[in-house]
Length: 118
Picture 1 (cartoon, rainbow, N blue to C red):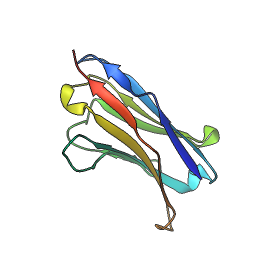
Picture 2: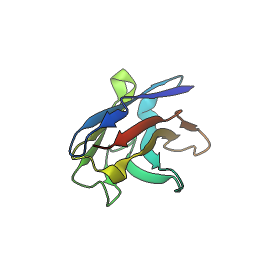
Picture 3: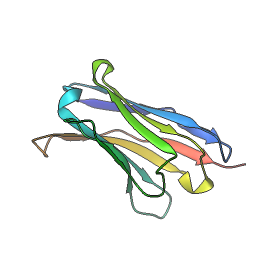
Picture 4: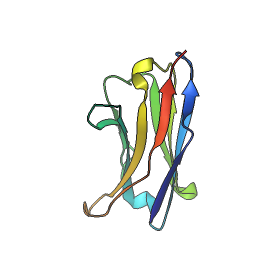
């Protein structure tokens, strides 16, 4: 089982990034996918989630209207499109996959750094 994030980097305020989470070793369609982030000195927080059943989504209030989560089961890849980035979006972003029925099947990526700064 492996989750590999990519797409992080340095971007100016107002810019965009697209994070990817490529998974292997399990059937991605049977899993919810969630993006979390953790800024220095702060607790990890949920950014966005997409369910493995209906594909419904939910977002943290702080990113609503700016971020979009999606999931391509055929390509075993999840995405987080981030637009209108703000300095407060700076954090390490992690993807998580959890089985829709078996919560103990819960996997994490290694994280990717996003820095929003001029």
